[in-house]
Length: 537
Image 1 (cartoon, rainbow, N blue to C red):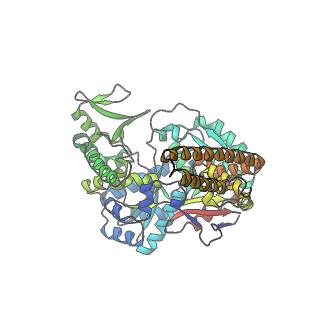
Image 2: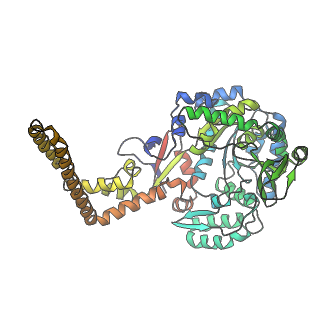
Image 3: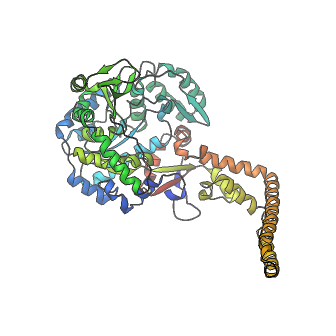
């Protein structure tokens, strides 16, 4: 399988600018373009100068490093897989940086952008390590404590949705994979029996075998996919959370995260940006087996929602100090926790993640924690020969496919119907006639101007009705082509979203072979300035 960058509209460019896709929020677009008004909301830009400056000023509590290394080693050992000794040895060395990306434990990795995030993380770690002359280790932070099962329970492969039918409670990382057996059997049928499919299925079947947790299964599968070139961390460990106890207690007593993040949100709102997160007074969960619930203060007591568990303030502080593993930061505090336990110079994220990170700079400054470089991940769209041939046949550009589908259909019909579907010249001629009528009769009786205008509008409406009827007739005549165009758009933008946010990597992997990830890795270059178009031929 050969991969090459696909030229856009016969130009030398191989990317479509973010702004041309209609798929990215304004806050991310402005950050990616380096808008000056956003400078106060981050520390260093995602370029070579930014990395160099960040490296010079970076601070990390080195006493955490040996514990971090020990935790990661133990997690690999418990999973039963071999760790990359080169990476873990580098991480153990004082002064080594990390570059991190985080993601939910989606079934079989979920949408394809999961793969892109990790490739970006590996690539930027390698690139900046060479430029800075420093050890930089790529880290995948597993969101094992997340409890939104609906977001991770299904995956789209070959146009079919495989869904995990299971009543889940608590953190998804603790879920047992035993009940996945029917889905794995269905997946085997979908994959077929090619050598590549057989090997890939063997890895999946082994990783998600009975008796594993979803955390263990994800670690093993991702480690296999990336040949151990990224270290995988499950932060749900009491030894690591011990270092976050001061922030948990501060949250309880002072609610500083809510104050600081809301201050940033207000500043961004004045610049025209919508809020990305809604901080609470207490931005953490109480977590035990089958429980991950928010805590709220009610009548002087701290109540674990949807349970009978309550604490006084002193009891809650005791619990935090002695059992930190029973507490889990939410989307507001998790980045702060991440930056405390990792020597993290950059975070690799998508548009949503970077947008909400921009609301956290004031909070990081308050706690005197280094704010990482916010590195946009790579974005890519895979095109196969059939897709390219069909676009060529219908003379449709990618930019047109990113627009409104009904406008695309109209444009195609008009282009292939000559001027039959447009009565614009006739409308202009009618306006000129009525202008002449108005000029002739208004001097005689000015009150007739309204009657002239009303009659003009009536006639214009009649022409527009005729135009709509002609368009419908032309669409019917070209129904087969229009159906193919709609299918083409749905293939590239399923449900109106980017292909990478819907499709799983497996169909592309089977077509490309085991070199799939390595080949994509060679195409991902910096800076990240748009949606990369890759021809899978």
